[in-house]
Image (tube, rainbow, N blue to C red; front, top):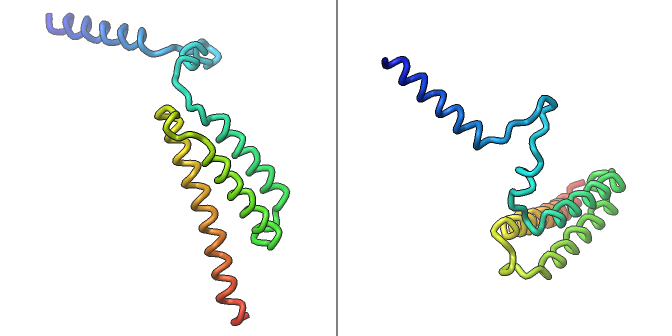
Length: 128
C-alpha cells in the first residue's frame, strides 16, 4: 500500500512539473512563446550596442596600451558615460535599472583603469 501511495505521489509531482516547465521538441528548441513572455530590460538594446561598438573598437585598435588606443578608448567610455546620463533612471523598470547601474559601473571602472595606467606611466617614465 505504501508503495502504491509513493508511486502515485511521484507521478503527480512529475505531471505537475511537466505542466510548469516548457518541454523542447526533439531538436532541443523550446517554445518561443515562453521566452517572449519573460520581462526584458529597456536597456538591453543599449547594452547590445555598447558591446558591439566595444568589439569593433577592440579590433580596430588592437595594439594594447598604445597612445592612440588609450586616447580612443578614453573618448569612447567618456562619451558612453555622458549618453547614459541622459537616460531618466527613475523611469526605468527594475531590469533597466540593473542594466543601467552595471553599465555605468563598468564605464567608470574602465576609465579608472585608463587613469591608473597613465599615472603609472608618468611615475615610471623617469626610471626608464
